[in-house]
Each structure stands twice: as C-alpha cells, then as structure tokens.
Length: 252
Image (cartoon, rainbow, N blue to C red):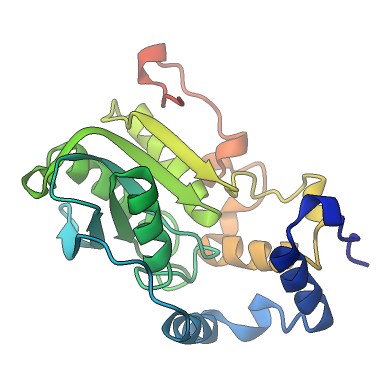
C-alpha cells in the first residue's frame, strides 16, 4: 500500500497530481519499454505549453565525439555556464523534453545553459552516457563556447538519473586530474543504485516514479552496475582513490 499523502508537505497542484497517479498508476516502465516511453514523452512535450522566450537558443555538436547539445543564453552579455544533464531513468529524456526547464533555468539564474543530449540506454549502455557528459564538460572547460559569450565559472547540474551522470562525470574528471567544475548541483539524484535506502521501500509506489522503474532503468544502463559489490556506476558506494585533496570534485 502506498504511503499516505501528508497535505502539509505538498501544494495543492502536486497533491492533485499524486492522487491522479494513484487512481490510475498505469503500467510499469519495464512493461512499456524505452521506445514507447520516449514516444509518450515526446507527445507530452509537444502538447504542453512552450517555454518562455529567451534571447538566444542554438543547437550544437560538442566535444571530440560530436555530442548533441543545446545552448541557451538569456542575454547578449557574457555569462557563467551551467552544463545540464537531464533525467529520465537513463533511457528517456532529450533536448526537447527538458527545453522548457532549461529556458526557465537560464532566465531565473541569469546564466547560460548547455543541455547535453548524451546517448541513452539500452541502445548505448554504460559508460556511453558518462563518456558523453565528460566530453561535453571538457569541451566547455576548454573554451568551446567562449565565442558565444560564455565567461566565468562552469557548473555541472543534473536531475534524477542526470544527477547520477553528473556525479559520475565529476568523479572521473577528479580521478583523471580535471578539469573540475566550480560546483556540482544535484537535484534528487539517483546516487545509490542498490535501491536499499528507506525511501525505496516507503515510497516504492504511489508517487509517480516507482522503485521498480528506477531498477529497470538502472538495469538498462548496465545490469552489472546494480549490485553494491560493483561500485563503478554508483557514486554513493564508490571507493575514493588515494589522490590529493586538490583533485576532489568541489561542492559549494
């Protein structure tokens, strides 16, 4: 049975959404499959309201691997850069699904945002997505967008499975000697793929994304990464290498 909704912890719109999910939860992600989940997400993005107008939006290919990306700039002046890695259970999500969020992020923070269209599972299992994210961060740090009016610190940000990728990308950069971002912003990140924490049981169902959905997505990314004894894809259980403190990924 799903955990009861505490009205003091949610606004009316969110409460209404959760109630609707509980009335009609729909099939599990593993029963639908990646292709159909992507199609449904694309239809939702097309049916939803457009994002706010912004001064400059440009589709790019970045890095040595020619990774797809989209650059958002709120104005013509120089701005710091947020390298944004989207969520989606490592299997769905793209530049369109997070277009409105990236526009709002750029406008509300007055920063440039580079959304990375990394490769997704199951067609491209781990470490393909991490490779792409590292490549994009290196490209940005090397001044790849300097001609577009980018100046100042670079921040790496990810939500949900994108938070997992942001963490893994920064850990690899730390282990390889940089370049490190000025900060790492993780929004409800999936950093423990053992799925053994209390919330994976108390909120396993009834809150939109189920624990089984996360397990399916993690398994699609790389089945061998899920057990705790294989920590390479799991930031929460990853062993810290014996390196100087200067190589740590800084959090501010």
